View 1 (cartoon, protein in one colour):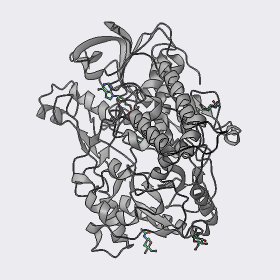
View 2 (tube, protein in one colour):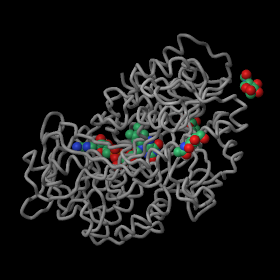
View 3 (spheres, rainbow, N blue to C red):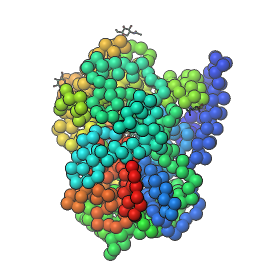
Length: 623
Ligand SMILES: Cc1cc2nc3c(=O)[nH]c(=O)nc-3n(C[C@H](O)[C@H](O)[C@H](O)COP(=O)(O)OP(=O)(O)OC[C@H]3O[C@@H](n4cnc5c(N)ncnc54)[C@H](O)[C@@H]3O)c2cc1C
Ligand SMILES: *[C@@H]1O[C@H](CO)[C@@H](O)[C@H](O)[C@H]1NC(C)=O
Ligand SMILES: *[C@@H]1O[C@H](CO)[C@@H](O)[C@H](O)[C@H]1NC(C)=O
Ligand SMILES: *[C@@H]1O[C@H](CO)[C@@H](O)[C@H](O)[C@H]1NC(C)=O
């Protein structure tokens, strides 16, 4: 069942079972109609699926995700450039843009539904010991599946990128590109014009609704002597409500932000449900000259006069490169793929992971429970008619805090931990256990007993993981999903940092702010960890290895670095080493994962990438 039909079903149930008491308020029918019309209007804003296929374009962009939409938008600013944007998925629709629906989208066709190769180190409590890696397959890519959290990272992240040999990627430069996109709606943040601006394509807002638990989170931080910060400002350590890529209570995906406003450009050609199967590279010239893609069962070949740009994301970009002959020689030899360029494609897979299911039970009815939200007509009316109320909260995430455990007293620390606060939990957000793939055995033993309770949860998220994984091809067939070796928690320091985050969360639960709700740590042990004393470091390590939750920040698999860096796939201008007319521009180029949720940094990479393309073709740019 798609999200659209899901919403309609919910509406029917609500209409059938309830009456709206207050007659001054719009009725549920009126509000459903108003959002239906709004949704129709929105879908007309998305660039249409171009029925014509030209033999040749100036640029071919593979993937209309976070980066691809930015690139298509910026490159078509040059009137003489014909740009083809190829997207494997279909249309985005307004139901996908209701923030609370985020968790449901993973069950739809808009998700590539990847799973990792089972390991004995992590995700042990998940079905078949596999972690789920959802990825957006839709106009807007993963910016349509994501939780809309907008963070940029720490200035040191980018200064480190530059130190690794990536000239032009230091903080002072990338900040300008973060700001180039930005349209901030919070007046108090907009005042700080060294870090923020209004008027860009990418709108950043607070959710229009907050639970009392989110307020308690902010209070708890103050009680512990922590600052309230604008984590996208000069320093990061401290507490904050989430800044999110939302506009007027709706998801502001990269497609809505960057493509809808330019849909009428004659030189923008979008093809949906068009899956690229190969990048065409001349093996003697070592130059890319086009792509092959499949649409409606037909195979097409199109040529690129200037460049092919891969923006297929951190899993599909390395897969496509390897299938096309760019990758580790031995691996390609094993699969009998003719090697055009030997590069370390697929290595350096990074992600942010957290101990999942760290849950606190409270004695009041103030948490977000999807079941009760969906059962109350007012919530539909609030959202459908006004874009307000609990449905405007991005998948239940409301606030966060950054800590530097290595230098805890430094207000300008370099965070190694983010605590992401949810005003609900696995028991109250009905799809979460399936999103992550928790086994029934674990769920029934640990969480079923508190199914009817009100709860909150924190994801203690490891910001700078030492463990790195790898993506490999299963076969040379582009339709085969690649093999994903996450290699999570293979470095002991990663485990220790997460345990410190768990300890910090427990401390926070003991503040007056959370004791007002009699918060108590849910302490039924995980069946596979009963050999350890509950709450000991050994227990938490075991629990982390069982409930290892990805925060979906897969990155790094086509690493950027200078020629001297043997592990680099693209150079600092994002050109594939040794192959002409081919760039990778998306989350896969990150040499090190920033202290950030990766959507914001990916927007920045694409903005900067677009300018580098323009410059390399002789067009003057200013930021
Ligand atoms: C469930 C989830 C929650 C997340 N939450 C957050 C969050 O709250 N905040 C945050 O900052 N980040 C979050 N992220 C991460 C963030 O969304 C990604 O890092 C970012 O969107 C990556 O952008 P990208 O351009 O690299 O790839 P994507 O946005 O994934 O785009 C790749 C596009 O390429 C298309 N494609 C792939 N292969 C082909 C092919 N062969 N042919 C044609 N098209 C193809 C895909 O369908 C997709 O549209 C989340 C991600 C997920 C999945
Ligand atoms: C926000 O959306 C609501 C519901 O569609 C609409 O009535 C309102 O005018 C919008 N507000 C802004 C500022 O666009
Ligand atoms: C976590 O807290 C416990 C109890 O206070 C303590 O014994 C342990 O050393 C802490 N673990 C880490 C990794 O800091
Ligand atoms: C919850 O517990 C707190 C602290 O014990 C108490 O003050 C409060 O009255 C309780 N609230 C409810 C709704 O029982």
